[in-house]
Image (tube, rainbow, N blue to C red; front, side, top):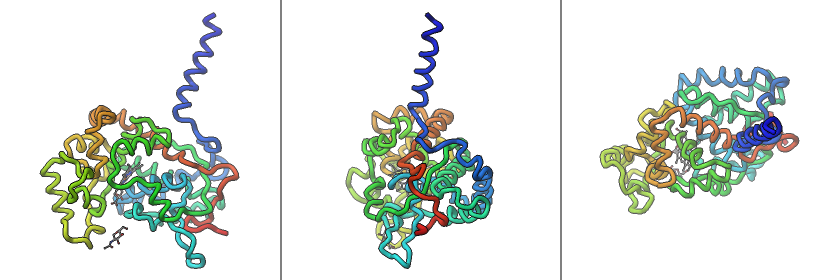
Length: 330
Ligand code: HEM
Ligand SMILES: *[C@@H]1O[C@H](CO)[C@@H](O)[C@H](O)[C@H]1NC(C)=O
């Protein structure tokens, strides 16, 4: 009897484990083994010197992946420029919510190298995901193995569509949970992916309302000294500097660690979502747990990152392999 039931139980367990994070059809861990075996080394070799000369690169590339994947899937649509010959072709960079997106040119540069090493094989969409993965690892975060095989879109969204798909800078906890539930993320994973804000900066533009408008976007209980610091960095009546001045997302802005959670618990979250994750009953316990346990944060972040990287992927004979990332060949 036992011999009959055990295999069934094992099958159910294995299924349950993979069902929580199934690799989409068409992606695989050995996708480029035959066509571009050195891909991951090439990406790393191209990025490592840049990470050293400009440490703001890693945060920029992680956010680039989020803003690509969130708008019509992880398909490199965010890299497409308006072409001079066809100015009606849209560019997502016109979207207000893409303000601050940087370092797209690095993906183009990596692509040029790969076109020499393995012409016509590697998608820009996969390069974006690999660059984000390298950014997390180089900053001290988890080393994430990612399935590959994404293909590139034939078009970008309009800036209006991009703005509608991306979260606004004053989004709250419930809307954030529903946003990431659409990608299959659990509450834990959603809190973990927000830990991305352990890296990088926020321009004053994105927190002016929170600092100076008496609305619910302003967290009621910001640490007063932190609020004074933010107001000092982002003064109210200097509109020109709003787009150039910025604050750090957490005190260890170039290190991928759990300080983001500790900092938010001390009421020093920069954006509304950073401030409210520790205050909402659905997420508070998870924030406290991640603040105390780096390993669990890294583990949940890894599975959340993978789910983000699976968003709306084009595989098989959908989409194309662009020969240059910033425009569509035909
Ligand atoms: C509710 C969801 C989210 C909101 C509202 C949000 C909002 C923002 C805003 C307003 C900024 C500042 C941009 C600037 O002023 O230049 C920012 C920065 C950043 N975000 Fe998010 N974000 C969210 C989720 C995510 C996710 C899921 C990731 C990564 C997977 C991410 C990664 C980053 C990174 C790394 C930065 C720093 C960028 C830099 O230094 O250039 N964010 N985010
Ligand atoms: C600042 O950026 C916002 C969002 O992209 C834009 O609408 C605004 O015109 C910019 N302001 C200045 C002074 O450049």
